[in-house]
Length: 169
Image 1 (spheres, rainbow, N blue to C red):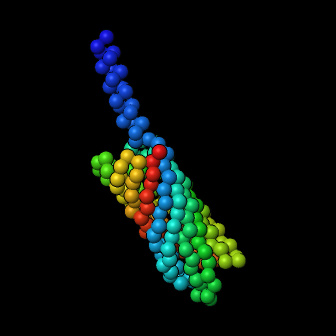
Image 2 (image 1 turned 90 degrees about the horizontal axis):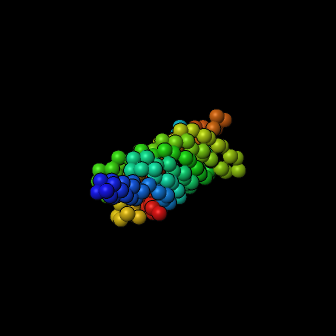
Image 3 (image 1 turned 180 degrees about the horizontal axis):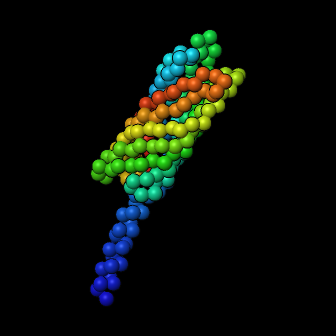
């Protein structure tokens, strides 16, 4: 009987530890978007995004994100707004309960709009770190890369460096 009691106690402790790591979260980021290309002028602008995710365990999460990456001017003078949406798998390497680093790999859709719209779907990736202030609140610092443009317009890369917060349910 003691063995069964100890086994149930052990499973309940392990189960609650795993359950505490898994769950839904939402967040927001703000930072700088740097767009680099030959036919569009290089431009630094403010970027902002919102995200939602589910962390399966302390090492793996899935995330969706929508972002406004600012605007860029072509050499001809017209301005285009850049937006993105993406879905990514996030690999997490925790150093301890508070500090972790992450890498994300996914698929993003980007749009340049200025009366003429140029859409692009491509691989996106990012790296960063997270500091957990509490069990529910984390602060992130990260960098992400997006491809913009299409085959009829010039292609470019936008690198976003951001700081953000995530709230875990």
